[in-house]
Length: 132
Image 1 (cartoon, helix red, strand yellow):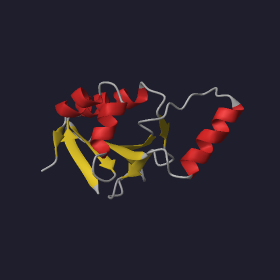
Image 2: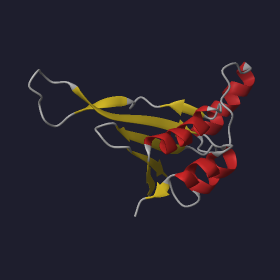
Image 3: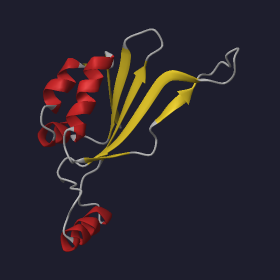
């Protein structure tokens, strides 16, 4: 199940900045510029559509420096599925419009978990409209 929110680039960027201001995420490997479906005259150039992918852990603070014992137990908890994980994608379309999209993957209550775990997320997401 996914929740989609459409809005301006600045409003969606504010949601991304709320997540990036915490230590509760890892940036996914799927951050890339998409190829435009039509081949331009001068060659195959990337389009201005950008996709950012984040894995957000709303209840866990992922610190850079962590004692080895604590890191071991957190890793075991993560492998056992005790630490909630939310996949969030940000799609920015710079091709002449001010369009962007937030896609939050997960079951029921995932958005509420993010609102409780990420400071400022509620206000930033309210500025972005839900997709109809």
